[in-house]
Image (cartoon, rainbow, N blue to C red; front, side, top):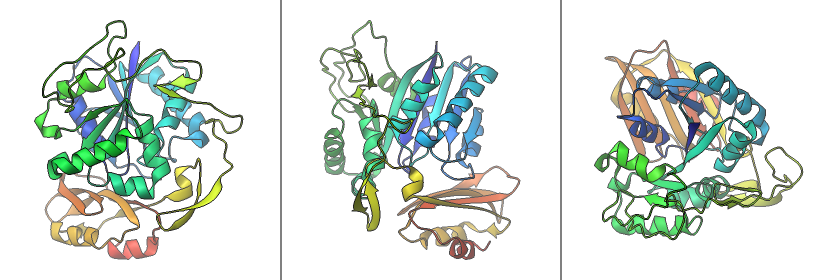
Length: 355
């Protein structure tokens, strides 16, 4: 039986980087396929991952959620039939719900085991995202077996402890990985994150485990869950589906307010709250010019990424508020820029990026 790994996480948390880390030093005989689900019309992360020699199939029409279960099921079956992967790695959109992804996988009825169910959380932005985008952020935490904190090398011990305490209020059963990624090996991460043989109960009593915990778990799998599920239960969470939408949610929402915007509380699609703008560019940017453009983005822009022609070679970039990463990349057919946020003026953005 093949395995399915789902690496979720809010916008810019570091999902793609973690996938690269997990697949480093992998068994070369293992056939791995990554399914990416970009929010919007243009895929960017697939280019970053293809450089690692992994087969990529992108779904660009929105987030994996109730409105797209049919498309996702079709994609899963096509990938399985065409590539016969030993391992399927699914990277949902940063604004997708992990519970919906799990539901869509289960509904597809392919003969694969749900293995890693992880959520990547930027320790420096967790409180802000939990406050402003609670429905999406909390769903990813609640449905995860493993929560992997990113950018802990830039945070104090007090900050990390505070965030872990907040997250454990949402999911106390998950295993929490707090060590900086560069300080642990791929094998250590996989050991912590993967579902072990359920017939053998694993009681970790390690000091200094890479997840930062003393593992004296109660009886159950080492992922922190008791895998004796009752009917209607999945990945350690009890789902009481109501008649209605194919994702099992009742879409009768009450009105509410979030992050200064008027929203409905309840179950939403990413399209209800987020917008994406994507465009091509032939402009050649210096690294300094690109950095200034990204620094000028307002608070409504939650994520920007792309690949553009530089003055000397090509530049790949990632942006989340207060963090910019610009690096050299391989030559591309055309420059592409993707912006995701709560409100975006496309004309203004094209002016900013000289498109």
